Amino acid sequence: MTAELITGIGELTTNDAPRSGESTRLPGAALVIENGRVAWIGSASRAPDADSRTDVGGRAVLPGWVDTHTHLVFAGDRSAEFESRMAGHAYQAGGIGTTVTATREASEHELVANAKRLAAEALRQGTTFLETKTGYGLDLESETRSARAASSVADVVTFLGAHIVPSGIDRDEYLRLVTGPMLQAVAPLVDFIDVFCETGAFDAEESRAVLLAGRAAGLGLRVHGNQLGHGDGVRLAVELGASSVDHCNHLAAADIDALASSTTVATLLPACDLSTREPLAPARALLDAGAHIALATNCNPGTSYTTSMQYCVATAVLQMRLTVTEAVWAATRGAARSVARDDGVDSVGSLRVGAIADLQVLDAPSVSHLAYRPGVPLTSAVWRHGTRVTAVPSAF
Ligand SMILES: [Zn+2]
Image 1: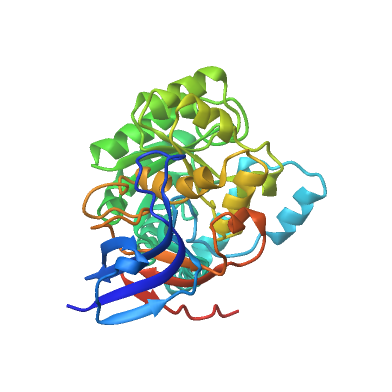
Image 2: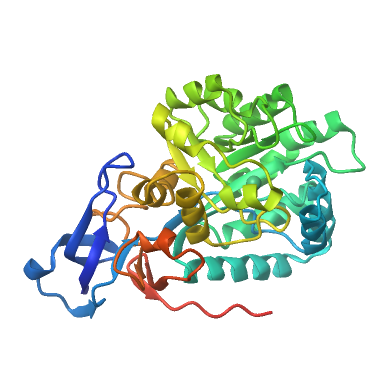
């Protein structure tokens, strides 16, 4: 078994505290990787011998990003819709139908190739753990194909058959399909079930039926909620003990209180908010109330076509009033919590002895540069599962 020493770390973010704001940043640190896991952490001056040694020359090292909300399985392009929206036309949930048409027409090979291109793009920018979803197939065959494609690129897969009711099928009939044969077909391929609980998508009772069917099939629960208005998504997610409720732009005081007294993580998607010109989620109020938050890209072709977690972290600091430490924590260990990977043998999002060795090196002396130098691609090296990865440039 070979051990690799990474030394000369100007600042090592360990995320060893269980909540944001308390995380440790060690100066002059070193770290040993063995068998894909962190085997030792401490002062560079006391580092043990190892089989190989990498000196990062005073750069900052932190956990790889944990992006727990993406929609990478799709075909087609919605740049015209984006441009129209920037020209003042409002976003509505029905825009998803455009991508559904393109995705149904694509082969599984094309879907996998596109998802892999985006996953590689994310990895080059420091994302070492990915969740992705189905949700652009919306018939039995296309959702099953999407679930297989998703499981070939992501660490965690979510079934989002309940994205919208596709055209050409009766609403009740579609709900029976999603909670019946479609769910049974994808269940062996996925970890979570999700529902778009929003005006124009699914109401509270429909969403509840979807989530309960997923739970009965052994899946964890996630919810798209409170994106476009004061809906029932947060209330439902907390009531059912969902792992995560995502978006959370429009929150009443009661929603914030409910999240603060629950184990449900509020996953905030600032790149999406900017791309839809929705108000940014109240991250500061959520943290101050004691809620658990995560940051994710929501990478999708309609409302947030970015794989950059650094952009989300910078936005959270510059516009959502998080501290740098809080934003980094939310994009790593906070996100890991929403997929039950923040502690235990397979933990990601922190650099502690025994954790999976997923880490990134910044071309900067401190994580503060992630927001201090917004838009600058700072990730210069990435280790995933203890192996230094050199990602292949994406093809066009
Ligand atoms: Zn989404």
